[in-house]
Image (cartoon, rainbow, N blue to C red):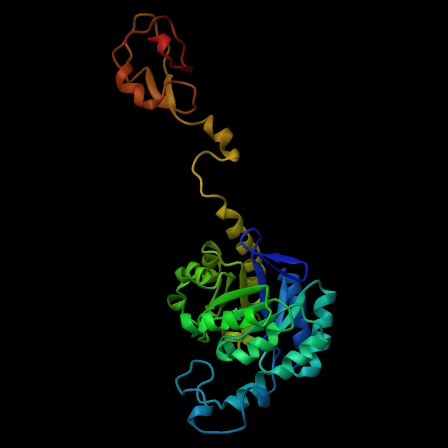
Amino acid sequence: MIMIADRAIGAGHPPFVIAEMSGNHDGRLQRALAIVDAAADAGAHAIKLQTYRPDTITVNADGPAFRLGDGHELWGGERLYDLYERAHTPWEWHEPIFARARQRGLMAFSSPFDPTAVELLEKLDVPAYKIASSEIVDLPLIRVAAATGKPLILSTGMASAGEIDAAVRAAREAGCAQLAVLACTASYPASPAESNLRALPLLAGLTGAVVGLSDHTPGLGAALAAVALGACLIEKHVTLDRRGGGVDAAFSLEPAELAALVVESGRAWEALGRPELGPRPSEREGLRFRRSLYVVKDVRAGERVTDRNVRSIRPAGGLPPVALAEVMGRRFTRDVPLGTPLSWDLV
């Protein structure tokens, strides 16, 4: 279990749902604040930003290395610098966004992409840090974030087991005592077929950390399945309206879907229960209506038991149905009215 602010996160608690704003504010502060409000109204537990400027995440260069591939479903052929210019959250917006989140009862934190972002976020007293998938190999950045002493969430998209282990070691050696690690498929949007959620227990075993899912697939299915496999945190991108644009809108949840995720992930966690078989307390009444052998026709003493006067019916109370073959052909010891549970003293 870990603690972020006053929230306990772990297997014994309902999933912690993080609403990722990313660039879905579409360059408008009012839209960013509206996303905060929508996340709060939906019942999310946290809102997350990404803290970078184009110049802190790349350089203003061109060429194949600095462009998305032409076949990319959303951003094909776009220069990295131009994409990050369009998608970044201006640093002066962070304070009003975080203030709105606090007013609405949401935790607010961010993914820093360089040490200057950590400096800014420390001034804003964020309760945690998230390291994005592409930055999991930036061990110096992980150490800077971990050295703050705040809880750290690592996303593992694209990472090998060795890279994950190195990142976890770097975080812990730098002072991180509260660590969560998220499974992630770092494609946008991601195919559910590539989620490999059965690796979640492996991730937990490899890292010894609380695990979760950073999910870029459509809908809620992958996130809910992850809860069944041990995910304690669920991160999904959110937008006000997928049709309204935003760089990540195509794989983001709308407010009503986010609300459904919060409710259904809680139900999925609650449904896990305990590894035991047998009647549940709520089934006690149902046990009264199991099938058993009953006299279904008025009979006289001395009559034989037949399939016309004794049957397996609901409710319980009579001999078990398996005894039917054994009682067939026997004689009733006394008169028995319809609706009497069959017992050995009656035959």
